[in-house]
Image (tube, one colour):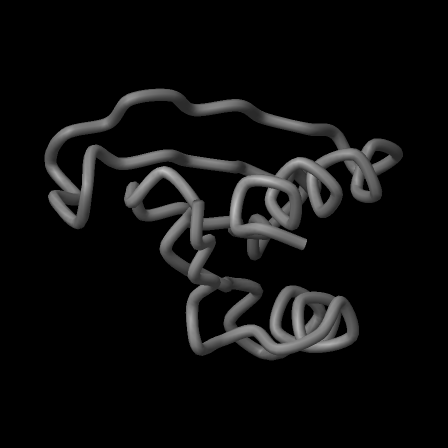
Length: 85
């Protein structure tokens, strides 16, 4: 079985940079073909939201999980795992 990872992000550091950047958002296609998006809230309370969309249809939400600030690493790990890291 060939696993193709999305073109972006290339490294775990890319995930951290995007999430901690101005927009607080990163997205990529997962190993299952679904789109994943990890977002940081731009206001208090600080939350991280991991959303899985069916294929690339952003109106068809398969799953959405919210993580409080102290679970940032869990959110990043789950996102990274979903996209093949």
